[in-house]
Amino acid sequence: MATTSQPTSDELLARVLSSLNDDKAEDIVQIDLRGKTAIGDHMVIASGRSTRQVASMSEKLADRLKQEFGLLCKVEGKDTGDWVLIDTGDVIIHLFRPEVREFYQLEKMWVPAAASTAPTES
Image 1 (cartoon, rainbow, N blue to C red):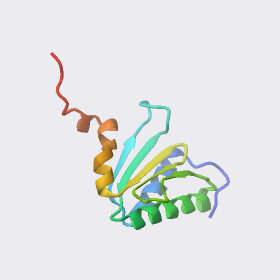
Image 2: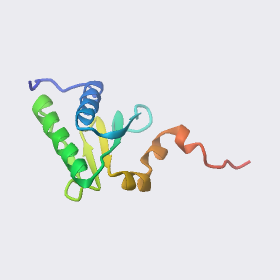
Image 3: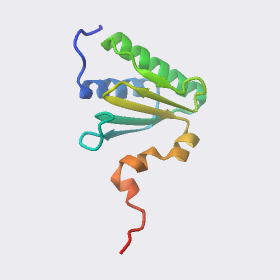
Image 4: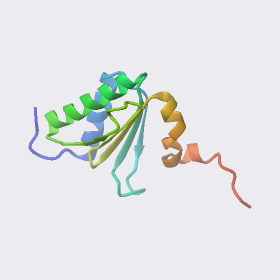
């Protein structure tokens, strides 16, 4: 089912979310980056229960995007499985084991509500 045209960032996001749901990812968070940064249009952060699940989810996702869209993704961190970064260009995916996700707290960098607990100066 490979398409000849590049998918839109929204189509890519929908496929990423579908793939992660199929593979039983947990605590999936999607962040709209449009207008905030030039690194991409969307960021997806999700957790896997083990290093094996994190590595497997990342491998399956990269394979699905290659098969369906002819898209070659940059993948980092798959060998250890504690965290994996998948960069599709328009959508950036971070997969973590829960403990590693808690350590990095990426959501707090990108979601204003999560970051608004910092004290303000008067």
